Amino acid sequence: MRYKVYISFDDIKNLVDVIAKKVLEELPNIDSITGIERGGLIPAVMLSHKLNLPYVKAIQPNTLVVDDICDSGVTIRDTVGVYTATLYTKESAVVQPTIYGTKLLNEAQWLVFPWENEDAEPIQDYLK
Image 1 (cartoon, rainbow, N blue to C red):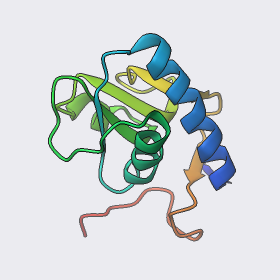
Image 2 (cartoon, rainbow, N blue to C red):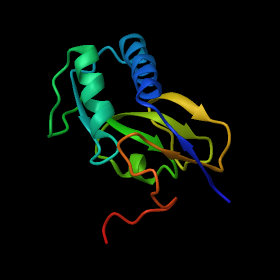
Image 3 (cartoon, rainbow, N blue to C red):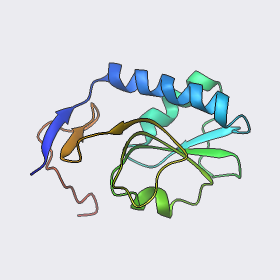
């Protein structure tokens, strides 16, 4: 059974700082940033400001594609970007992002981000 963990904007800011440092140290060729729609937009814009890099809609060879979480890994696996970053990642994901803020140690956690409804269902179908 999954249980909810509520994430604050301070948590997000701290993880964006971690990712920004990793980008500077490990991916110096990154020249633009984009976010996967819904969960990745806010952290991508924050990272864009932090690194003073343009936010773009079209993914180029050195664009960092950002999402909030790598849960199953399917979204990251299916992205057309070469470089990916997530705030959180799970060990059980089918693929891992290029860089991430932190790894979730408890697979049963369902993270509720500050831009989501607090009463959201643990598994959502946004295409309904």
